Image 1: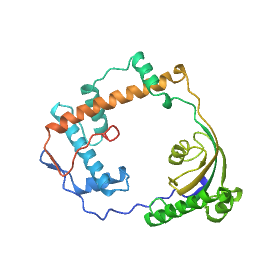
Image 2: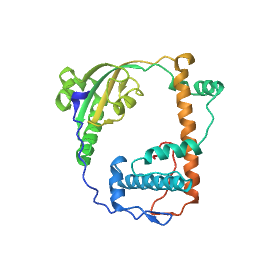
Image 3: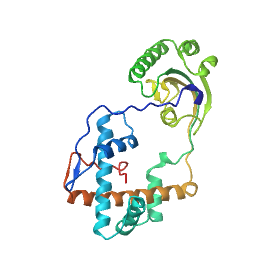
Image 4: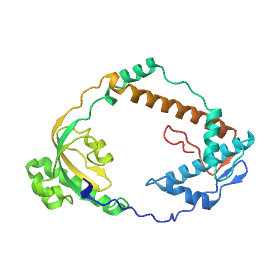
Length: 271
């Protein structure tokens, strides 16, 4: 798959204006906010601004809390100070073996071997940041799917005609695929498909793919003993994450914040 497209991304400076974000009377500089944007990639600029603003507000609140608790710091050791603050103020219980077994039993689909898939594809290539060409590629992929519904036997000739992947020379055949053999965003969607022509195009960094699953061997359930460490690691991470979130939320609730709405979700706590 790596030969099916380019990894190049281009970054342009945001043309939209940035909000004035204040926390407890302190105004976050536009320069700091503009610099933080690069760490929050998203197609929606409003989401980028919200996440960047939230990160800077939370960081400010944590450093203010460290100062209030008499922890000395400079710009060089801010990260260590934040870790120290967390270690002293955030506590959680490690999951028991019963917790781990319960989670394992309640989520069997997470603990199986990866399916093995044989697939053909047609890649309609489009650069990740070219919205116009991606829309064109998506529509073209939808049209090809409609043609294939009428006559699936056309797949090799349509691959030869339209695909930007070298696999077009073999009718779009990707061979056998299992975990880690293609880019993650393509793999995640591929593994959920049933045999036959996929109803919708699959999007990846390379563009849009028309996919035909020719054979699928489903994953087999794993024994608890094989994934015990993985289950415990996940539950420890989740407990610590929720405890950190609760601590940060308590600081946010006491603060006077304007210019950004603080939204808490499991994956958006950045410090």
